[in-house]
Length: 299
Image (cartoon, rainbow, N blue to C red; front, side, top):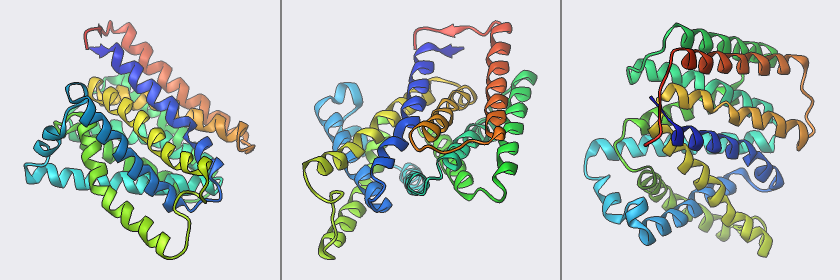
């Protein structure tokens, strides 16, 4: 049974993530690490506001403390923090280096990796049509990798880090907002230390200073929190295989952003990859409809 709200959340999260390169591209002269640090810092501030002002809706500080009561949960959050940090750093670097297509490739690979992890680790099942769809998507990803002409390390790191992040969080029974808040709590001290070091070294800590740049620094938290909230809501409401396939909206949007905003040139192979991936998606959802998959409107 597929949740309609889950479909909406997952699709919107992927679409918003697809436009994040526009924000990062605007900050092309800013140190990538500074961008990542502000993402962590202001995400924590926003999430603190949510859990403090609306505990009945998002969960409260007591829930955050409860999420850290067992060694297993503490270790799980340390793992997700590390995976998320690696993902952020590599993604910002890729966009600033105008490797937007490589970043898109990573997120083309990510859902395929997650589907496989879901089968192996979460015991989710795919029918033959689902495997056929995954196979077609895999062919598209393989073609993209061959066309890349070498090991696409950016794509591989992005795919593996985010796939492992999603699967790990799926296995942790914690409110998505509380989970994100705990992750940022772990990252905030490191962020403050880094900004203090930059300040002592005479370097800028707000993208160069000025009202506009300070606003852009704070906005890093917004572009981080909103898609992640939607992603976790969709991820918990949907089978991981469905959420993974919907995520292809993200790299597709990134591909368009690369063409339109960054003026990158796509070879014919790029469009063939695009066609194969969407063919796989169409086959997957068409097979579910033919099979009479019911939709759960209550979730």
